Amino acid sequence: MTTACYRCGQDLEGNAFGRQDRCPGCESDTRCCRNCFFEEPSYRSECKETQAEPVADKTCSTSCDYFRPRRGPARTPPQPKSPKSRGAFDALFRKGPPQRPLQ
Image (tube, rainbow, N blue to C red):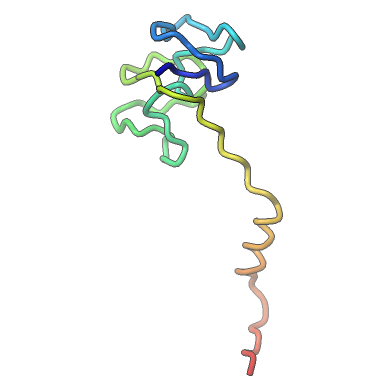
């Protein structure tokens, strides 16, 4: 199984993850957090490797010693929350006068 570029989805060769290597499809850095096995957006530092130093820009080339190419299709980026869902949340926890219970 090969690794797909996080940005364009093109298959990357197994040895295309040096500090200077770039994706042939979109010219983005291949040795970056977004192409790493340990990258996990739900974690605080967005990395499952607890000993790795936090990285500010997850799309730039990294010298992280724990980098391992992710295998399989590109991970879809998390979608921003819609204003509609935020409005529903705010309405649920809105501060205001207490409402009378229904009888």
